[in-house]
Length: 169
Image (cartoon, rainbow, N blue to C red; front, side, top):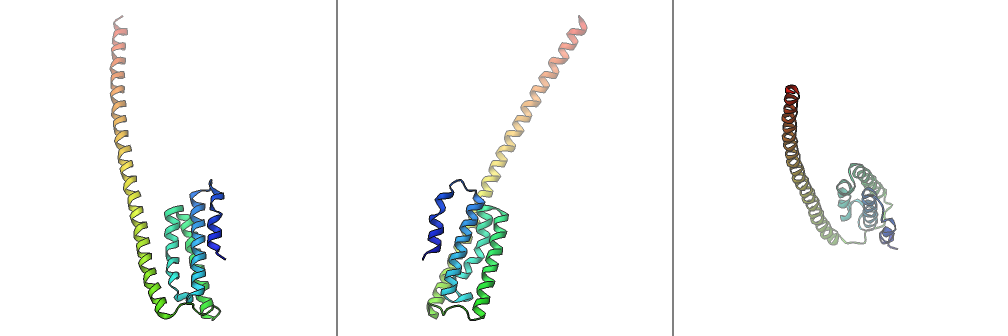
């Protein structure tokens, strides 16, 4: 009955799965939800179809470029399939009246806006953290280089003194 619930229930089985796999699994769950909602709430005009646009962002944010590209392709295929089925009249009539569709459409757009903003802020936070870590690493490296130069200078001076003392003897 609830395909996404079944897919999500199976999640704990893969505790050792990679982040890319888990991002792909999340994307598959979202595609399933969007497909089911689109079929029963207005086809290509369904409020849920907006969420297919978010799939590549989720993929890139959680699993990397490859997962983002795969989810973008899957989202495009899903939208094309829903469009084709809708144009051919093969989808059941919407379970929502026009006013409910408009309300859900608006809420879906606001939700999508919030989700994209959250992803952008998260990416910005990670970028800032990475930049700070890189600056700290550069500072440590500069200190290490200075320390090694000082040691090399002392070793060179000691070597010269040793050569001078060996030459005198």
